[in-house]
Length: 321
Image (cartoon, rainbow, N blue to C red; front, top):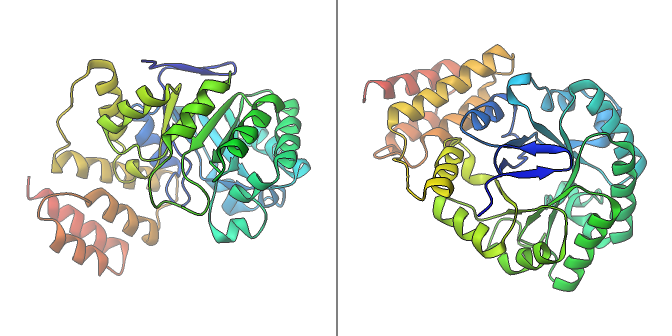
């Protein structure tokens, strides 16, 4: 079973990637995932048009540091020219190691603009986008797509992406209509991997060590991209990597270790000046998810009105160790 992979001229030490997730994969969270063994981390998606307009909010999403690299930046758009120009700005400003094209976002606000998964209905446009981007970049290009309800059309899009010059393809095994419900279609991912020559990375329903191993073995993909299972749980990368390498399960993190990760996240947010109440509230809920007898604490977190209250509740948990 493969545990390393190359994307174009980028050699990765492993084959586990952090998926781009809106309001989740900021720099501090990406750093935690890298420290726990994520081989490549992706930024939140950024709209190409917003980059061209030099939107401070969008550029903040791709702010980086040497410690987290290799970094992939995911671009969202439907116009090849805009995507090429925004990729040029991104590569000059933050020097990522990979540019990714979003062909999978199912959000209504994205679909209505003709971007994300909506582009899968226009294979020729996808080919033009990938061809122009690959011809203009000096770094590897990946594409992240969802599957279509028709296997033949899904395979057609995958081949177009490869022929147009992408260095790797990430496949989420759900359709646009499914969003995040139902199950990821491993059979179509397996067919894509069998027919393409570029690396194929499986995404969807990778929840733990055993599902990770099953997806890799069944699809024969080159790597895995982990999304929702990593939210509040960056340690999952170490667990999966160890299991794939050694065939044994690591012990779950203790309450103390989960709290240390949370407070490390807080310190990183302070360091980079991006600590906000809304984000802190969400992360506190994520980092306490699944802990034993935690419901009263989560009720208190849900009722917190400011950053100090959230940190007070989380500090109180330290006394339970």
